[in-house]
Image 1 (cartoon, rainbow, N blue to C red):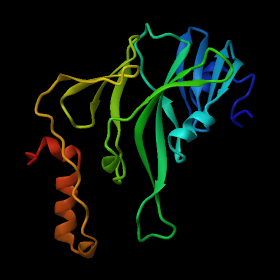
Image 2 (cartoon, one colour):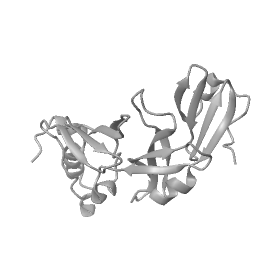
Image 3 (cartoon, rainbow, N blue to C red):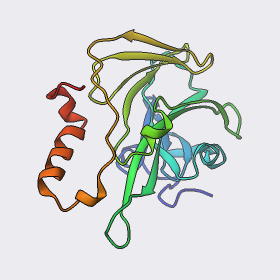
Image 4 (tube, rainbow, N blue to C red):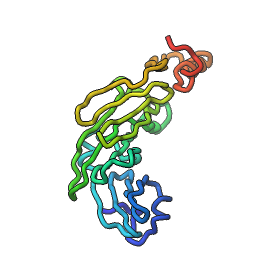
Length: 214
């Protein structure tokens, strides 16, 4: 089943403008990934190959979908695709219906040498308790040809490495390592403006650069 937006005659310029992410393979071809978990290879304005990633993505997290193609070193083989996953959940909310929130975390490496894609490895640096919290758990990470993910967390000034094959984690550069877990909200204080204002400031990931974490 093809994504409803995808057309055999859609130009490369238009492909890069739709709601999907793409990776330039050559000057006249791109890989494109959609949030419906399909990868397409477009060559000279025609879809020449496609891969269905739903069986892979849903085994990692039933709420997940492909968010974008992860950045890679130029030497990384075109037979593998590096993808960032996102997931949509219902937040605990007084609104009706409950609002969704989006969370990033998993990166997956997929082998596309055949028509049936194969998961090589998946990676999520956040502990489970951290992933369940209600905010963007996004982190920057790029893949090298040795299958090393070089990454850093949002608002953290240290750099880490994780090898997708050996599962080994290494700290490359530890600085102040501004990072702390969120404090659970006091639901009986949700109408206390002073409490909410203080909670918002001290729990914001941006604020970690301005407040000395304990």
